[in-house]
Image 1: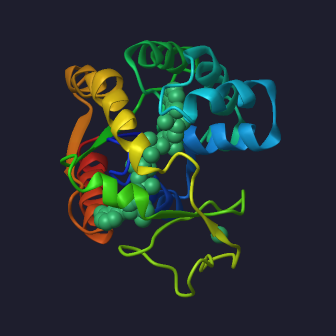
Image 2 (image 1 turned 135 degrees about the horizontal axis):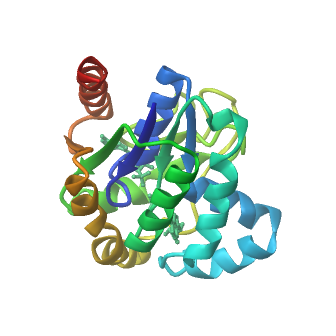
Length: 221
Ligand code: ADP
Ligand code: ADP
Ligand code: ZN
């Protein structure tokens, strides 16, 4: 199964993709995680990306397109994948369509996490992520706390705050989303593969809604 998640920063894409990746045993490809890994490695692309990420702006398209071309052709993506954060503007979506047709693939479903802007600041400023690059599990100080403060339940590594999860950057990131990413909702609606999910519910309820949607989808396929 090949899935794509849309939704504003803080809507729960990472959380739901991690749950779904475990459930369906298919790869979760998060553009943000991949970019942060290149930043940590200090590659040329990573250093360039960081200047945009620190400002809440989109990293230039060629960086993302090269990154996803490379990842999607890898063997661990052959039985499906869940995309989180890419494509994030219309030009990336068109390049992604080209990648899919070159690979003779199609998307099964685009899941759009719908939520008002109001709760997003609290979700983003309380976000904590596992520092272990092979884990990266997402937590929240209030809404999804770890069993032991600041320690990952799964791998026992330290939890950290992302450098861009600051209140003053949230406004810019949301503006970037509304201007550049929101048009993708209509783009995929026109392709008749978009499903809206109410992302204001608890994570568990959101997850159950997604599973129900995917079950319906496999019935009708
Ligand atoms: P969030 O879901 O909270 O917005 P992400 O981890 O998806 O955060 O993204 C963090 C940052 O990485 C973005 O603010 C942007 O600078 C960059 N980024 C992620 N995905 C893309 C993309 N597809 N195109 C351009 N920049 C991206
Ligand atoms: P995104 O990838 O869309 O930016 P995340 O999955 O990282 O979003 O979630 C942002 C923050 O909100 C995290 O701290 C996460 O634990 C928390 N969160 C995710 N889903 C929910 C939910 N349904 N209710 C409350 N908090 C949530
Ligand atoms: Zn961990």
